Amino acid sequence: MTVFAVEYVYDAESGQVRDAHRPAHREWLTALAGEGVLLTSGPYSDGAGALLIFKASDDAALSDLLQQDPFASAQVISAIRITEWNPVIGLLSEHAA
Image 1 (cartoon, one colour):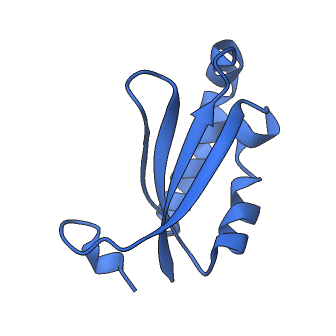
Image 2 (cartoon, helix red, strand yellow; image 1 turned 60 degrees about the horizontal axis):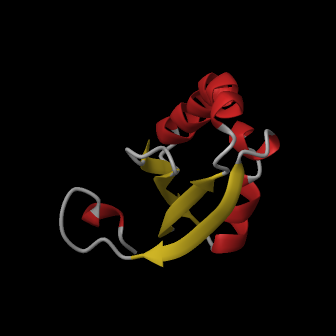
């Protein structure tokens, strides 16, 4: 499995819609964390987006998975950046390929 850093950029006008879908979004993320697919996640303090760290077989599989996010179906994500990442030091380094 490969580790990926995923950056969400939220639509600036989507605050109310995100608030409405946040419980389902976090429930989805919690389930993925329980499966070991999501290593960590959290929003940026300015509310403009979030950083999520996943384990996946490849970026295509991860892209398919991200389409299942309730935030994706609510169309509050204006951009997604997926980058293969190699954590070499620290708590997440044990997940490096």
